[in-house]
Image (cartoon, rainbow, N blue to C red; front, side, top):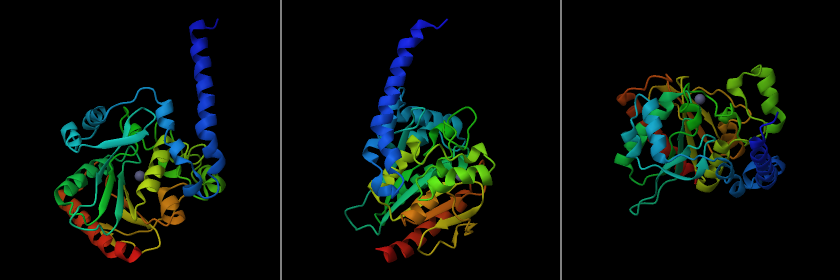
Length: 312
Ligand SMILES: [Zn+2]
């Protein structure tokens, strides 16, 4: 026997789902195949999380849960950053937070840098270090660059009982960006090269996830000169772009790994020609020392100072 109490809500839910599909997802699905940046209606796409996520959490909920999860960041470290959010939520209702260090009156910035961590939820150090880097910027931001920092792009992956690489729906967000080769290669690559490794699942279609939709909109709106994405634990620097790569960042040496369909390096670094520096810390569970972080930071700023003026 069917529980009649369920019929109306389910009927209502499916109607809402269909409506949502027609109004928001359909235009994306039908336009995302030519040139990603200019054809996706990100204004509509960015509304998907708001329309479909019922129980949204606050920044203070996010900071409480981050503090409970990460050994190197407590909720006060997180709260004192005065993080902001605009219109993006994860599937579990966490706000997709950022902090901006805008141009100062005293000088014209050399360029814009988008710094992002935590796209993979089980790379703890890659999220914790973002709080250390924000502390450096709080102290030393001189207006040399205009920074936007996104400390944790995949809060659902991190903030569940057992943290995981993928987002709540099991999608590897770093394979879900709409690179030009996504339709031809992403699922084929996943099946044939990774043997359907669930940790590398690129999603049913490009930009199927609220986190990648939101981040693509950030790229479009902020229009960075360089993107720096922090990962762990491969102990290297990878680079996608047409300018000179940094040879080393602190103790991490440059080692080019190539690109994957749907990765940020492929989408932004190759297709959009926005250089992407991928920092792979040495351990996912252990933070680099303060001196290693400082060495890395000095090299990042030195490289940006050398390369960004050549681009403009
Ligand atoms: Zn990673």
